[in-house]
Length: 510
Image 1 (cartoon, rainbow, N blue to C red):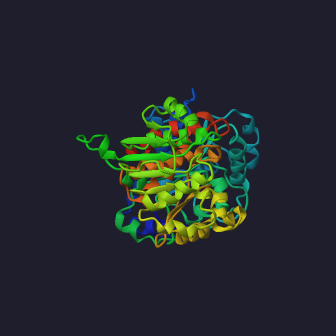
Image 2 (cartoon, one colour):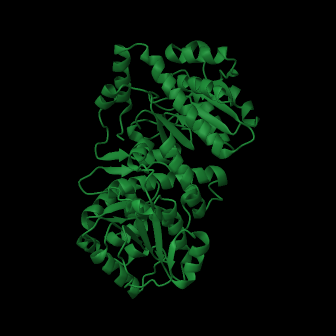
């Protein structure tokens, strides 16, 4: 999905409304419905005994979006309440229509009209979910007065409840991602229509949280006419993943969905191949075969009994009857590992994923990957990519986009540069960026789950670039669900694998 500037988005909506004036309320109704759906989904994953939701509204269209969302939430059986950071008489247009409807439905609302009004409420226990609808994409400069106090309230309470921003975190510049003053530190941002250009900037990462989008019902001719603000960069959206994932035919069988072969594990790192197998088993692949060492094989049997397991990993392991191969998790870097990776690059019968140690044994020679006759996907973290390119991790992190593009050009492979804002790069194509996931995923084994998931998708004969985009989105979404259930601090890589079914459900059913 393309990124757009705030001005161009407003102009696109304005042209549509000029043609059909009633569309003003329709767009806000769609935005509120979509926002309410995401809030309800988060509440379900939290499984909190208190269904209360507090929505904070400013005087603009963002406020209107949360008024509309409050109506839908009340219909769903939640108990929303609205806190308004402006005098009610300042609410105009479509926003006023939805405020009046919310008031008529007796949804509780309160005005907090002075900055000092926000001080005493900091000591009041909040509901589990707070929604930020204070400022939208038109906000300029540093927030002051009542709005500043409301932003500070949200940030104080963010340590004890979930914060969801409508369209953009209040205080963030939509085009640059920077903030001139306090900015809401959101756990999730639900952008309306297209993501805004600044959301892909490193400056936005901390405040943005995980990015979701909802349709606002803008007619296609107007949506298509909004210029792409970042032509070389595309966002991996839920809608994109829904289009990528294959439909499963009723007359299909396990052979229909391909065979994935996973090669890895060692006496020192037996768990890595177990986690990769869990990811592959949750990918939709028809069969998962694991070749590993004896000490890891017994663990795979226990954790992934669905896999076909062999304790006979060697450089000469048979590759026939395989649709996609993963090598690397826990593989080690000894001469046998080097021989195996060299053989795979020459003899793989299908797409090949190289992760972890399988990247390390390339020993700074990215050009050898070009010799492979089949598509190759590399899944490095910044340190692994730095070793491959002969630089350091700090240099990679300073310009991740350029580093991913350079690696794709030198290797001829699809490069998945992991980290906050995972990038998927292929020469001659826009780079795709994933903006979900959370810091709880920075744990051992998380990348192994991703690599196994990706191999399983490739086994289903998906286009390799699309498979890589779908894998990182599903992995990030599963990580977000795991964080809601377990907390970022206490979640582990196995929780990500166990939440993959919920991630698939989100992509298919929303």
